Image (cartoon, rainbow, N blue to C red):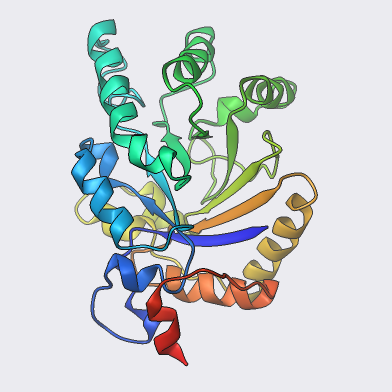
Length: 280
């Protein structure tokens, strides 16, 4: 099975050929999965998650970003108390319950900061993540090239397989000391995730005013999308589901690229929301 989604639902008016922000119901009429980044900044209330569920079809699924406490952002060097860390996981598990009970959680995405390097300490943390989120599908996006160094990356992939963690295949600009290489490796027989950020090298590496608005400013061309098509078809033989998430949002290109890849792959999504009917 192949699924395709975007990060957030409001920022993609071209999904419906318009200019207005989309509702979640409208988005779910076109694509079967969405990545939600807001849990990174603050764990939503259970009532918020239940509201999302009411706006989508029963088979629609969510990828939720792990909270920044859980990914050790801004606390790594100074440390965080074990009690505070466990509390974050406890609150996050409670928030997930409506989704896990109805089969609407595709994965929790741990997008680690660039300073989360390969180390014994961090291998142990990956083990703890699985212990603290029992039964929850976990996906990991590394942003430090040390995890992919020659001679060790195969051991890293085996470690993820043993833990049942999904390795996120990342497409992003890559240069010395900045970004990670594209590693189309499956570590879970159930799910493979491709997360596509674009290839805007200048916007990716230049910090400063407006940096976040430039970071994912990129439109994949037809040749690049054809390359992703080939990767998806290869991964299909290794995982029950291959999910592609477009995160090249800065210029509104993600939706158009997603629809183009969908057409290239010749896939269709059933059980979508009522907005799909309005397209005909």
